[in-house]
Figure 1 (cartoon, rainbow, N blue to C red):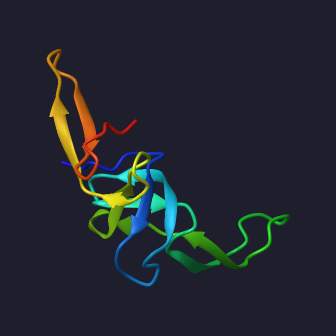
Figure 2 (figure 1 turned 60 degrees about the horizontal axis):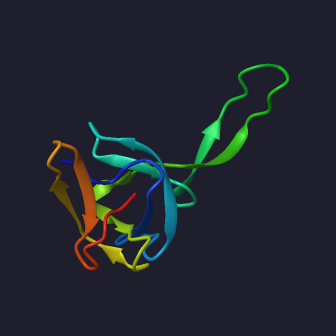
Length: 104
């Protein structure tokens, strides 16, 4: 089960952007990847699509593996593992395993 969701603040644990923090813009669960703002910037050669649009080299964010990300707990301000509590009414809540506080 994927515990990282859109708008979570995450910390990159491995790779060329190790140590960078960013906000999750989009999660791609079938691919096991996420788009994080300001992380994993790649250059793409783009052809002009119309007469008004110019082509060239464009920098864009590429998806990064979910296994390389950790959620930053808003309560204790550290990267932490997440657990899931199932409440009495059947709803699931994510919680930080360090400070035991609910996230969201």
